[in-house]
Image (cartoon, rainbow, N blue to C red; front, side, top):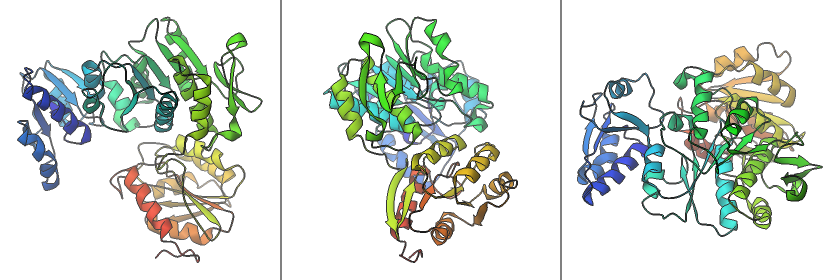
Length: 455
């Protein structure tokens, strides 16, 4: 039984239907509580493959042997409650993919930085000539890839807390934990549960495995000692601590100590911006080094990696004002990291969208110090205004939606300024997802006139 007819659920149903067609003893049912014409068209190919598709349903048969739940399906939903009422194991797509694979895995998780670090690790492996596939939240669904690659291909996976929460046997050869800050509390119920679900990335690691852990972040640093106790090779990451395996020394990225010390390149040579991306680069380098990538390949890969779409992505310069799309910043901590990426250049920040249960007061205090102005918009605008209430003298403007917010920001901006979309919120009040929001923002910037007017 596959729960949810989104991208992940359809990929699982398709893979298992192909297994059934090849003679495997498996019957596949896909169920989704939604029922729309658009959804019907998306699942039509699965019907042709023999999948039993049930839209508009919230029931799970008692004789189900295994349930694969799509990421993000809330634990309190009727469909998930029905699944839990059966005797079947409930697992995630990433868990199923692991069970079906013969490849070594490198898995990356954290509240922020997952995508950049995952893509950078894959880039470093490619630079070294090692076959690798990016899977998980980015790239193709992992369950679709594992049947197409053999044991020589490394699977580099971005894994979310939703996916990890429903794992049992998932056992990456290398795990990477970047940070743990408040996010998705509305789904997990508490920060402690969220952190525990993230830490499931280490659950099956043992002697011979590697865990890369950023110890500058208190949330992730808490897991260094317990993971080390299981005889896992823990490689710590820090921009500040000299005892870390991956660190900064005199402006240089460095791995290892003493006779094993490796100098990589200067911080100013990295093409990706911000302190957080220095940490991401250190983590990626440590992970790649742990599976035998040479120092030369790591150096060249770090030099040639380019910013990723929707993550501090430069999208245009209009009348001397530079515009950046950081739509992937869907929580306050991601915005705090983005604020470090522009040295002392004047910033006008766009904040808004659907709040995922976060408190914006600390963010407001940091924005007041770092930014010249901010524009708030969307469903969470009133919450931002309340958070900024104590920031006397700060220029805060409320806009109706993102288009209006960009127009206001363009009117406030002067040559040399940066206008940054780093919204600290999910996008679902106005857009399909953060990618849709970022694409629309990019299109809007392309339509700005020299006078700052939207065409």
